[in-house]
Length: 459
Image (tube, rainbow, N blue to C red; front, top):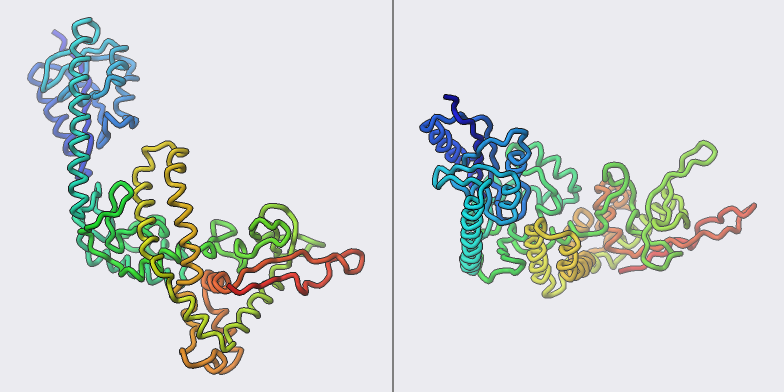
């Protein structure tokens, strides 16, 4: 007598350990069940840590339905195969025979089998919905106590919110590097070289409110928090404001920063806030770096000469007797802005966690008020609260920059030695830069000298 051939399917909704032990346990019981009955297991299909009720695609389930030979299916329990009426109807179309280690045989090719399957599925679906409702109540109670609702421990913290000292040290050094003027790209390369460090988007990673000990649930900050802060509140707020600074936006190949004023300088023709970008023009075989309107191909300016004019004005200001007051004013955060920023970032981070379950249009709609207010406050913070913006250039409170530096050459050397991101940040903090068209009054209608075309307005 030929042994009956069967295929095995196993699934677990949430693999907490990542080792697939739940699925392996189901497969072991299925194989033992088949061996006792003299069945031959041909193929095994599995879905690790995939829910059957949230509409996610289950590769193992899809492969089972696409089998060229539809053998009977052995499962630990029928609810491992499907838990919704939608999936059951797909199984009914194939007239399958299902055997359960923890249940009876179901023959979906018969009216009684289909009726029984619909009853079992209906009960499973009801139990799943009740379980989800109970879980929401339990999660809300835990969140009210400040318990972090993480699926797994993030880098720097344990699952319960305690600090992991070695990982927290890496987070603090990454924050210090960014505040010191390093680019996010450079910091990410540094993290990639460290064993065990996260390979992630540095801006998003260092702007996460959990680093300051904030706990959020469903977009709202909880009154209590059991998350230990890795960064103090002032450092985190300055860091988040710095990372959100438009002056840090990069240009050029692979996001490399290539110019001082790209996305900072505004076009004086458009009048709608359009910024300028860097382009390369080729004239008579020579290549020239230019600033040109981002929206329309007009209002060109030679990049080197514009940069020199802006840098000269910046150094003149830093040498003036106003310098100590400028540094002090741009190191003071508006009252209440820090707390509001922290709250908005936390809400947006929470929405990002659940964003994958929403259609993109719906996600953008529900987060638009938060994103717009966050952008406005980050711009306000950027203009008035970059603690590190003048680091390396500051003068003592009772001295002018002229007294602080021995000569102009030292100031120029210090400024030129700063990372380009830091120089962009200083310019963006001090000035509103507008480039106006150069008049064509030169010989044969050529552009006249640039005098008066670069407008610098103090912020």
